[in-house]
Amino acid sequence: MAGGSWNHSVICVNLNWRLSESLSDTDCIMFDSNMKLDIADAQLFFYPDCMLVCDDIQFFENRYDPKSAFAH
Image (cartoon, rainbow, N blue to C red; front, side, top):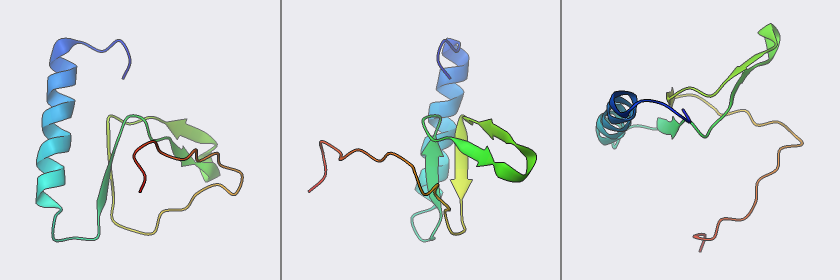
């Protein structure tokens, strides 16, 4: 969350780190606040501080996915 407090940032970092650590033996994946969560049926979207996905990820057909500078 842009403009969040120091405490909010520390909580989010710790939560993401701890959850990511516990997912090493699962098919689940963690996302941070840069990933948009779209609930199409409700016509709502959010940028949650922490998102855990343990199911198939559904992407929009027309999404823009630039090449990463770190991709191999």
